[in-house]
Image 1 (tube, rainbow, N blue to C red):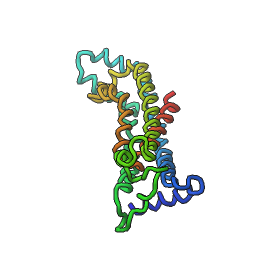
Image 2 (cartoon, rainbow, N blue to C red):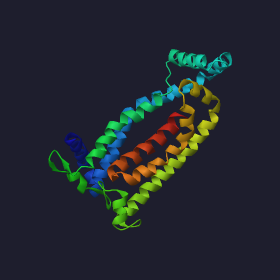
Image 3 (cartoon, one colour):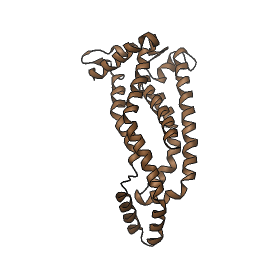
Length: 237
């Protein structure tokens, strides 16, 4: 973890002339962008996979008619079709999964008062008036909702709310347009349709994440979800 702390500190030093006291917060945003840039090829692959699944829908519909009275054979035939086409219904999960180590490292870094037996100096840094190691509850206790730290969180909540609303509306539109494809997804992965119905609302959970996590981790989440919204709008046009 000390190596990771050194990386954050070096990025902050590079951004110091531009961002001054908020250089460490800017370093976290830059670090998040770099992580997302690294996994972007997988996001592009996931987009190609989704288009490939859409192209298979006529063949899936034919299989559904052929095996209408035998759900087990239908499931097997659909799986074989997607295996043959080298299309995975879960490929879109890979970019998120590969980000988890970076996120957990950042979370741990700003949740511990010591690093390698020494005091964690990163906890003294802040985003404007809000400490990077603090939480929304700390901001409420020190000045309330409209206190100096509280206003920082209000700004983050506004960004998250806007991104979540954009994602929600876009996901609903996409689900409505792809509704004929939903039965095929049901046959590939049991329960996937139920997940699909819940997914449009998942973006609003980011509001809870920002409220309960250390501010540094919240910055990672806000930056990553904003990147995801823009990336998906570009890749899934």
